[in-house]
Amino acid sequence: MKDDRILAGIACSQVLAKLSDYFDGELDANECAKIEAHVRQCDNCARFGGAFTTIVAGLRRSIEAPSSSASAATARLRSRLGLPE
Image (cartoon, rainbow, N blue to C red; front, side):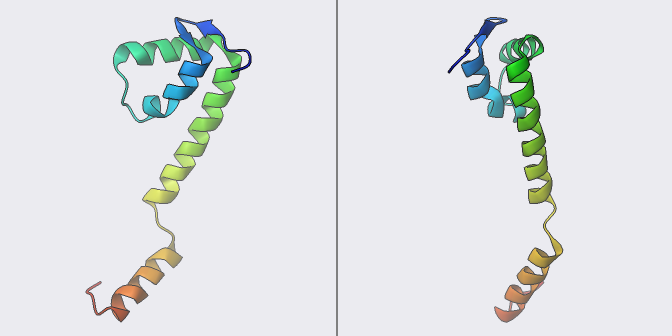
């Protein structure tokens, strides 16, 4: 990775590789602390992390709240298959 800097004992490339696990709560407290300290010191990772957070949050909202058209399609399909609603 170009401009791969080591800050707080972790390189930018390592932060980016672990970002998804960080947001999913799959890292131990020590790894989380390293990532958080790195992001506080690194503008590049802070920008990317912010954009990543926004995208992941939007995707989670759309997955958790199905659209009314998806609900209508599901109801029609269940009806045609003779399944209860």
